[in-house]
Image 1 (cartoon, rainbow, N blue to C red):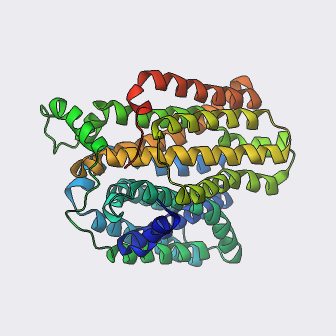
Image 2 (image 1 turned 60 degrees about the vertical axis):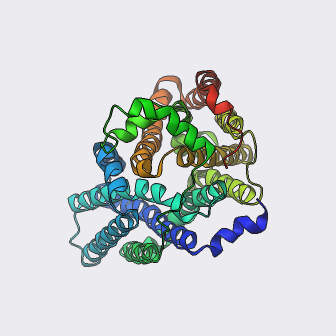
Length: 419
């Protein structure tokens, strides 16, 4: 694809509205959990309570994974997004009023986090399943690349914006969140989807054919059909599990506060730079892939990107220089973005339209599990082996996983094109 055709995506109104709506929602989430974390810590001065915010946010995607996918396939995905975003906006209004008048308690904050977590658990898979319907035919890779940049832009801008707003007024972040989520609901309401729009490809037809015989024994409307579909397709199972174990082992970013304070001796300002470095690397890679789309040997490129991610993790683990640590983290973010784009495109192309919600719910669970459990794994190994050794072991483990998966799932290596 040329540069013109790629950026021409933004002239396609369904994609433009979807992109802007998703961007508003992701930015609101990033602001939310920065502001809520600061607020809870001010009220309780408890690290355990900070941990509870993450746990409460994560639990709904585990508890409702099968229901989420079934709902996303059975009902209008655009309306599901709007319902979630309206509920999120109302929750933000509640937090804003409670903070402004001083009656908001920690328990009320936890309940609000739970509501946001449930909404996010339904919103994520619904948005992933809707995205192929708003991308012009033949441009799934480019659309996925630009769509994947939404999280990275939120990760860079959200914490900073939330911090500035909170410094101005404790209720300002929540007011901003309510406006962003309301805007997202309006933007998604403007999307007009062609019901006959499809990204069926040789890849998706081959994957469906492989699954037809094994799935014919099951009710394809079952809430468990998505998990079975992933389990019975080597391409999907290999792609999703590769990301799960790679992030699980390579979660060195959890240890950034220790590196900033004890190894790099940079203080809070350095921690901010370290946290933003992976997102900066990912955004640079997004700009590159938007102009120069992946055209061949995408399966091998996904494996290679995971290997580069692991090597960069080891380099970061051993670094004692700020510039080298920032460079390694940026490379990690760039490599991860390549993997994300290919994985997301493969999942969309290899999944029938009527099952995208359920498969996206499984994908969403894999992503959340890898991020949350990866942080726990990094903390545990750091306590046992030391911080530097733990980060290095994680990076080496990521490389080993990629090499093993190349042998276990040779069909992924053979994938040449995404279109």
